[in-house]
Length: 97
Image (cartoon, rainbow, N blue to C red; front, top):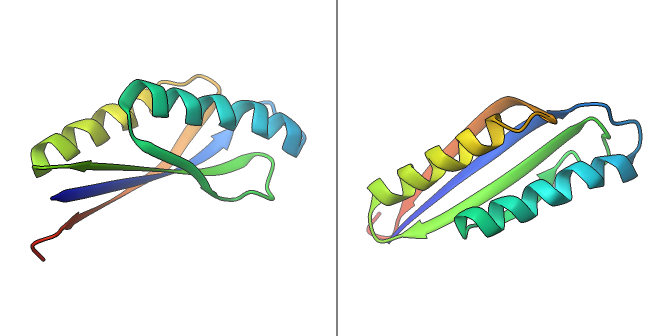
């Protein structure tokens, strides 16, 4: 079994409050969950209104599928006009390790 994770460091657009931040982050998390059938959560920067950290995890039987899903997830996030993707950090785990 393979587990792949990716964490995005995002800069949000025209946001001035934490309430406005949630209006950007919640739909992104929901879209990722619905579109790719992956586990998604806001994982950091909760107190900063213009920054967000969003983590995604996928589990599959082979590493190729995990890489493919994470590639498509990263392209999806990078294409969102309301956020700037500052960084994406990936990690892979195998149960045979």
